[in-house]
Figure (cartoon, rainbow, N blue to C red):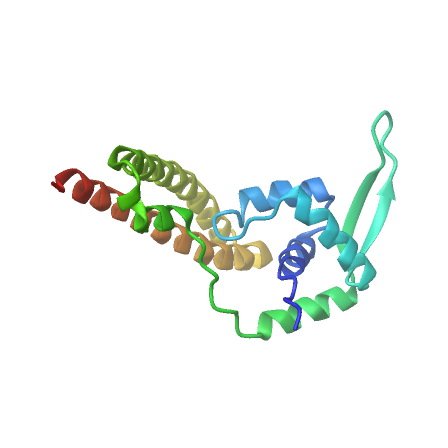
Length: 186
């Protein structure tokens, strides 16, 4: 049985907010779902074509003076139905592929200082990502206070952001503990 393209639901979900170009989708994904779901140009455009072929999205071409034609995608009624059906399904278990853990697991074959450098870099990245998430969290909290539909949407986005915060806090703590253990080993 072929594996289902889950990216199409991520993109449909973003199109449900408003019509977007492929570039807009990439930019919005980087600012919203990137801490738990990666989408890149190489995957966005083939997925948009798939959505068009399946009748789940439609494309409008907009002429922009002095620039290439802008392609704006929006969700169709069928797309809303497909997204709603997918949202009601239980999610698949996560497919973890964490390269850092694999390298640490196999670390006895590497130089300890290389593993330490990887752990330090990851800990710093966790701190940087946490700072970004805290700033976004404040923004989403202010949108919730604003009420109405945007506040309702922000509440769900805030739940996923808090997962991201917990993840990066935990990963950062683990990196520091692993570094301490590595440095104290004989």
